Length: 218
Ligand code: SAH
Image 1 (tube, protein in one colour):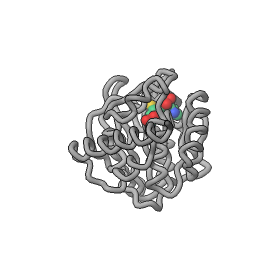
Image 2 (cartoon, rainbow, N blue to C red; image 1 turned 120 degrees about the vertical axis):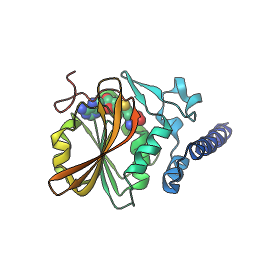
Image 3 (cartoon, rainbow, N blue to C red; image 1 turned 120 degrees about the horizontal axis):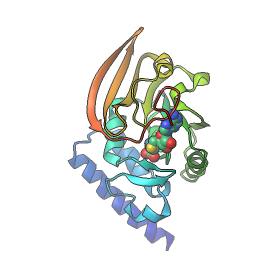
Image 4 (cartoon, helix red, strand yellow; image 1 turned 45 degrees about the vertical axis):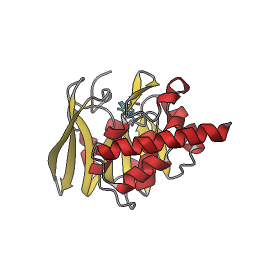
């Protein structure tokens, strides 16, 4: 039985990849990562049948897993080569964490909800993802111990760039963060050039709020 369920999911995953290609995702490494990572393991059982739709889904604690297209578009901007140390803020379901783990050398991910992080830890083992370190806490402070990072990706919407994140970004490093108000943001790519930070608008997005010392008050 299990194998027919698996092959059904594999078929659905293939169709999702075609959908993403139709929507303009060209990066083969990212499409391959989406083909490898079993998204159905990362969503709650109640919405598992929808795991390969190109849509955001609830994951508990009032949070959501983003639409696969948004993950793909965002990760594309980081231009990962496989050598990078990546910091992710907002582990959530850990699906994006698992995608990043396929595309970079080491992923460090911070989540503020213990319930989500505990679940993330289990699912990453189940999906046999090993190059990820997880931390419970306020990601707006970054993760100083392993800085600097070649790339950072913030999965929640912020009113401004948390200063700790800029300071932990490597020279030439890229930081992707949704900036705006609580409801709507502009996904923004920030590149470090010495002590200055270049900014580029990517696409309007709607993320849950980034709550913490360098984000929104809870
Ligand atoms: N990439 C995740 C997105 C989850 S939603 C996924 O696709 O599943 C955003 C996540 O950011 C939530 O889990 C939320 O709890 C977390 N978050 C919000 N503010 C945070 C902060 N200051 N530090 C760490 N995590 C935070």
